[in-house]
Length: 324
Image 1 (cartoon, rainbow, N blue to C red):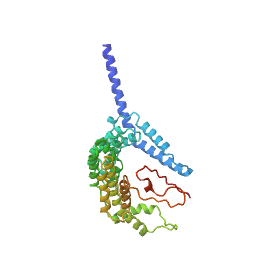
Image 2 (image 1 turned 120 degrees about the horizontal axis):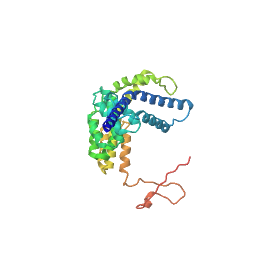
Image 3 (image 1 turned 180 degrees about the vertical axis):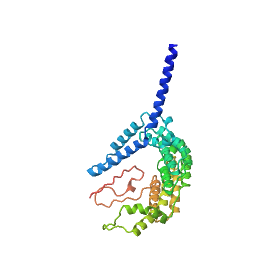
Image 4 (image 1 turned 45 degrees about the horizontal axis):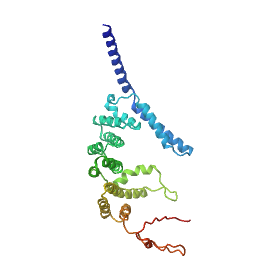
């Protein structure tokens, strides 16, 4: 009888503890913690600027990590309400707890939020997967993402070519990485340069941009600048794709295929395109390896060096210096 009473009391205590644990998750507000962190960041940047001191990003990031770690203390992922899961995911991510952040994002996405919120959560999932080195998860998640806007689709592509493709390559190989790039590139949205200029104009006007002589830029001058920027945006993204593909081919020991990608970019774009010289520079860097050296003559009146050709077949180290 005595044993049964102890067992009943122990069971009751467990029930109370479970209730307290669940209440803890419900009463802690992740948005309050996020607001505090954002407030701290803003104040830290403003204080540094007003004092004229260099911004100490390492110290700021360390404090943000500590604040996020304190905020998630005692929070159990499986007990988080789906409606608040994305906010909690952001905190777990800041604390470096990427596995939990990924799980929380998945829980939030399952609630079928609006397009922008769903996209934001999926991007955080990608970031978490990448930090974990989960190339397979990245490759599986990317096809499920639908960008809600022109800007979002372009940002996603930049994330793939700038970060995610390399992780997929390491985990799954060349073909999977190239497939991921092509999949996202095929969904990228572009807009007419004039539409881009109209969308960006209000933000640029707020910056009160001025000419070299200090006079304010007219709306027509800003529009002309933005139209030109809009024209180069598509080319910029295409160059980033070509450059990343060439890099992946090089890692896989297939430099010839990488060169073919860069040469196709050059062939498909006008010679005046600002990204064509960049592509040509990359091509030259690859092709010069193993190629004969350019002639290098020495025209000074002292020293024994007459030209590189006198050391044909030998290893030569060239040190370039300048005297001002």
